Amino acid sequence: MTDIFSEDHARTLDAADPLRDFRDEFHIPRHGAGEQLYFCGNSLGLQPKAVRGALIDELDDWARLGVEGHFHGKHPWMPYHGFVRESLAACVGALPSEVVAMNSLSVNLHLLMVSFYRPTAQRHAILIEAGAFPSDRYAVESQIRFHGFDPKTSLIELEADEANGTISMEAIERVLAERGQEIALVLWPGVQYRTGQAFDLREIVRLAQAQGCTIGFDLAHAAGNLPLQLHDSGADFAAWCSYKYLNSGPGAIAGAFVHDRHADSRGRPRFAGWWGHDQATRFRMGPEFVPTPGADGWQLSNPPILALAPVRVSLDMFQRADMTQLRAKSEKLTGYLETLIRERLGDTLHIVTPSEPGRRGCQLSLRVVGGRERGRTLFEHLSSIGIIGDWREPDVIRISPAPLYNTYGDVFGFVQAVQHWRRG
Ligand SMILES: Cc1ncc(COP(=O)(O)O)c(C=O)c1O
Image (cartoon, rainbow, N blue to C red; front, side, top):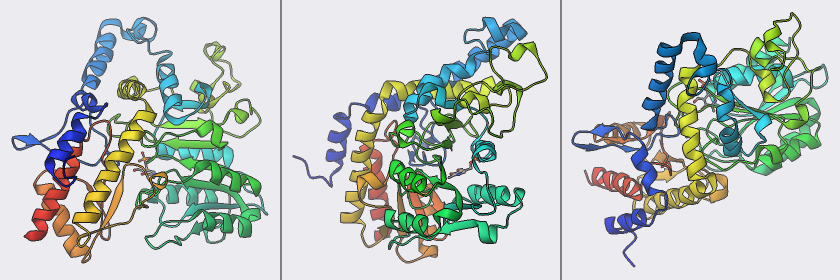
């Protein structure tokens, strides 16, 4: 047995990793003569090498076939969004008819809130976590105003109650018990972007529904990070982006989930566009909108094929790697990072993210001991030597080893670099 704090140990772990070959399917950004240690999959995942070919295929079909590419391309564009359906559903634990790849995350949240945030004089509030991602906060605030309510009284932001700024299930239960009758919608993260805390979705759904609230999830930091069981969770809706753990490229096409029990809800208000119209009759071009059943009925436009091609490539990789296997590696990889930090860097980095594997994904949020200035100095030093995490004000570095392409050697390299920096 090698010393777990040695580089040899990291090499042994990498050699035994059943997913190790996936790294070769990615472009790893260069740093000087070597490769970056890239820990920023929580922000932008790396590029699968196969994406270039997939884009060229579509460009070639467009050049070769023009409009006929809709029917006769290698991957015909007319049914194209259907090519990612099975893999998207598998990734988030949904029925194929419950998911659709469309738009971007904030757009999908708005479209879904149009249908699922239906405030009344008595039940008008939206519950989110305090310190939510700003775009989510802007979205819910603007929805509240749009419906003629005032965010001062209709936006409930649950404050963290745990030492590191995380939120206990008891706190969620309490706010729902106390104010549930005012709450029309709970919009909750699968993984909180700043702390890296993962939530038990099924339990949150249970608590919300017990109070008669509608419940939706923002899975920006959870999709491709944790195995999800969206259908079984019973959530009404969810949305996520594909540029983080799903490695589908900057601004990639996002995902949306609408639970099967709403599949045929024709009476439910929604914003409509022709691509959401019943597929069987869409091209009759009639004046009346008839939604196609399932999540597809929330589409507006015909999908941007060049933007969907990377999603197809990337989700195929997730299918091959399998979320359960990915999660098994992820727990080990992040656990290894945690152990090395606790044992070797306890005086420099304080881990904000919960320690229980069930309450986190890949990411560890690290508060730099000594405050903002010291934190910035460390962060800039790491970036300058090709170790890429990201910075969240006022003093947090987020480091996210992604099991598809990060290695135990990467983790070891990060810890070693901070040790060297500390010795100065
Ligand atoms: C939790 C969360 N919500 C919303 C967004 C905004 O996403 P988009 O710009 O794709 O709409 C992000 C982006 O990182 C995010 O992390």
